[in-house]
Image (cartoon, rainbow, N blue to C red):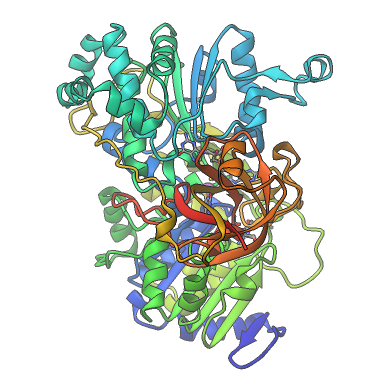
Length: 630
Ligand SMILES: Nc1nc2c(c(=O)[nH]1)N[C@H]1C(S)=C(S)[C@@H](COP(=O)(O)OP(=O)(O)OC[C@H]3O[C@@H](n4cnc5c(=O)[nH]c(N)nc54)[C@H](O)[C@@H]3O)O[C@H]1N2
Ligand SMILES: Nc1nc2c(c(=O)[nH]1)N[C@H]1C(S)=C(S)[C@@H](COP(=O)(O)OP(=O)(O)OC[C@H]3O[C@@H](n4cnc5c(=O)[nH]c(N)nc54)[C@H](O)[C@@H]3O)O[C@H]1N2
Ligand SMILES: [Mo]
């Protein structure tokens, strides 16, 4: 479909006309062309996307990981030389302690829950760190354990549940380091043999006083000692985290602080132990491996230059936030979105709408309609192009899981009638029209066997892809799993560095221009997912686990409700630095005092969000808001 300038509705368009528009749109200056992608497509489509963009001379490869796990990739690469999980699924089965930080796995990673239940069954311990008590992290009914679910109402998950102040995790992990040192659980020989920079890290922890640490994270000395004791007395500890860690203005520091803690405890580079970020989209990690990033590695750059027979003089490249800012200042002519919802996934929806409105042509390659197709409209034309999802493709594809497994998807079928195309065919046709047969035979790339041969030629972690492909086998990217404390850094040692304590300001009402004489309170908002949505696509209105009956709710601690003079279920206005939402129902919940929770993407209209200087991720999990009763 196409929505043309001045028109009020989309109209049908032929594929041939789509490609004609694409030919013009992609002939703009390379730095004015950009892509955004979401990790649901195959490795093959991802590889072709970056190849097409880079062959045009553009490095503007924004990706949903820029809003998701980029701090994990940046932090882990710096410390261990590899940006993914170092723990394999088999390894996880040997752990006897998991520290799960900032994750609502029962809703978002249900398969991990079975591993956690089994760990508890073999006598292991699970430490949960989350400002909100997520009911499924306390007790979880897994379909894999029906008897327990029936007789006991589910399996016990948490051994210890800590509710820190949002955004303070770096301070908490420094405190855990301090306690590990004090209780003689720190592995100094390990640090001497396998790491660098450890002296500064431990002396920073030793020299930071307890009062500052406990005040910053809002937890007691005893709670922290118990965490350190549990880690120190466990054999194999896995440190695992999701958006509660990354989506902060010091998201990369949070990751560094966790990695430093794992190293001080000697819990990295051994089977059953280590750092394990829990990924978002099913193939978001594959997109990173395929080079869909503005942070192109030197190895891949050289390999692509060889393949393309041209030197890649690339611009710095816009990541997701950079792209939005560039669009807002009129620097983008063409945007190609391979999946996702670039509009609603970003903070400050008013800006998003305005910024996208300055782009001449936007292509939304999609499997389902979403908010962006209605609010993220281009200036001259917006195209919504329907594609097969990755199980419906007329060719084989591959994906990569968060545990570093590469899997082959067979040829599939679709139940949809209509004029759908595969993502591979779409990208190949555009690239072919722009580049012809030079320097590679773009026309032949419709054959995904050929794409896989180029992947294995250029991407070292995938060098075995073509052989494994013939054997139709899934395979592990082995050099990312560390069973010995030797890491792929220049010196082979983990690179530790001091993480500064976060300085967290409690939000104040004076920050907001509120009407006079209203009952009001300022709190920290963290936005996240309900139990019935997949990112910006909402499947059901209610979140029964949090007692939130619809999307227009705010979860608050009862003490805050009382302090402000509100009552449960009252309707209030929520005010951020950008916009407000009216008629929001107050729901009392098991969330830390001073903290509120709302659903995304609705909450994204409220705030602008600061960004992490090391990764440019927006701080979705710590936004100052005011709540008032009009
Ligand atoms: N069903 C389903 N599955 C999904 C998704 C989905 O939308 N639906 N989305 C996928 C994607 S892309 C992703 S990235 C993942 C997201 O998976 P999660 O990261 O689990 O999702 P969020 O809802 O963002 O939850 C973050 C958790 O962090 C906690 N938290 C908030 N602030 C802090 C903090 O400062 N410190 C700590 N320690 N915790 C904090 C919140 O209370 C919440 O429990 O799930 C993936 N899987
Ligand atoms: N406030 C707040 N904002 C957030 C977050 C938060 O926690 N709080 N989380 C952030 C995170 S972690 C993420 S990952 C982003 C999510 O950002 P995105 O990945 O951009 O958003 P999604 O909602 O996952 O995208 C859904 C759309 O993808 C398309 N799609 C699905 N499968 C396929 C496929 O196989 N091929 C193609 N071409 N299209 C497909 C469908 O059309 C669907 O409408 O949001 C971020 N924004
Ligand atoms: Mo994500």
